[in-house]
Image (cartoon, rainbow, N blue to C red; front, side, top):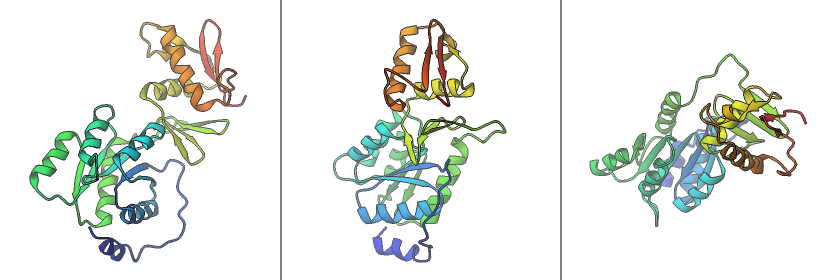
Length: 246
């Protein structure tokens, strides 16, 4: 897709600043063309998505280390590591949905993307609204439905969304490993109450050292002074508790 085509397609879109919902899905857009990145980012933000961009696979890896994303949009043809390479690496350790964008129209390229584990494949040029529809359809399948129970808990400057397993500090999403996300979900389900180490270990054989190591890693992400925690407090000989209002 040429930049001029995208600008023409988006000419009628309002440029008013969009106030995003706290639980707006977080997308990572990776494309080496700055103008396309900027245009798609503005368009998707206007559609209610929280968008982070990266200019290369290397830059995307840095974002993935520190942030949690609901879906990745990867351009295939990038200098150095391609979108296919990045998708293959991501898929080896994460089920996060992936949409590939490419100017390659050959069936072999589409098949390669799908074999890697991409959820969808969109050939350039494309209508931006088609991308929005594809994103929406994928997220409907992969994101949990809201429940009637309390969906989030606030502690200090943080908000943890129970159903989505997402931890935020303001507009920033804090990256959690799957294990950290599960432990925080268990603690946040009963704030202020002590949770036994066995329950934090998935109910299996208790490995106290493993639980303590995971808690210490989580503390380093949310505590100002991990050695003197305010939120993730130990209960000697029993387990841990999440204190919402220290």
